[in-house]
Image 1 (spheres, one colour):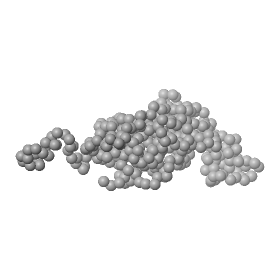
Image 2 (tube, rainbow, N blue to C red; image 1 turned 45 degrees about the vertical axis):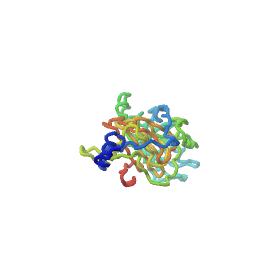
Image 3 (cartoon, rainbow, N blue to C red; image 1 turned 180 degrees about the vertical axis):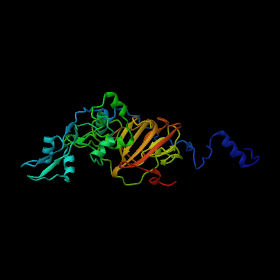
Image 4 (cartoon, helix red, strand yellow; image 1 turned 90 degrees about the vertical axis):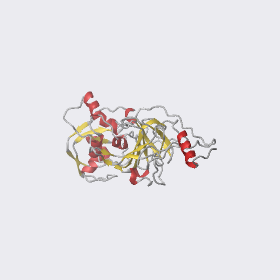
Length: 351
């Protein structure tokens, strides 16, 4: 070894050889490539990507056969139940209960006068999703959620009659329905689960992407989260949560990540959605966690999990990329509590 100039010359030679990546500034750029290969005994193989699957809202078409119900009053007869009155009048049980200040289990008494609220009521069938119902009537699903006071976990039950807000006096044409059909993250969080048949339960989560949950099966509850969220990738935040310079709001953060970087589940949960139906976000994974939390991972190049699959914190669920409208490899990452986006930097570990 020639010691001319000492260690600086040796360091420069090593840097020129490309063996050691240059340092990265804290404020931006991509994370460095690994400096050494994993030990031989480590298994770095990723599972094969699962076959593509139709979204749950396409598994069961919805017929727009809602019934128009006029406002009226009803006097409770002996043996009546609120469900029987709803079936007789065509209105929804929950709508009648709300209009009369009743709460579950909707106790009523003989001779009680009930107001039957007017509305357009759709009878939910098993397997129908909120998104499919909204699509059939060309009405935004968020409006249906508000009109029916739907709350977490937003799973419909077959046999329920829900109010469909009216937009105009005539039914929309097929072209109008297609033009009005747009899906966003909130739609998937609140309206993507198939309605459960009477006395049925959601399907238990699968531990493997090879066991595919039928698209018309509702997903079981995720395990209780016992620890905090972790970063899904190691990279610089290149766009932050909140309004941007053009006025458009960012509901998550963008994290720089070399294409093909493993994307990790931020916490234990159950995969709610995989696909590319949300404009702009490309190949997308959504995971439901306990306590009403949902995490969102967009712009991936490859998806490695399946809807209904249980995942553990730190498990690889996708490979990063630049799908959708991304202009460079990056991860779009969101955290939502119920329907509300939350700044991920307020929940992730400081670094």
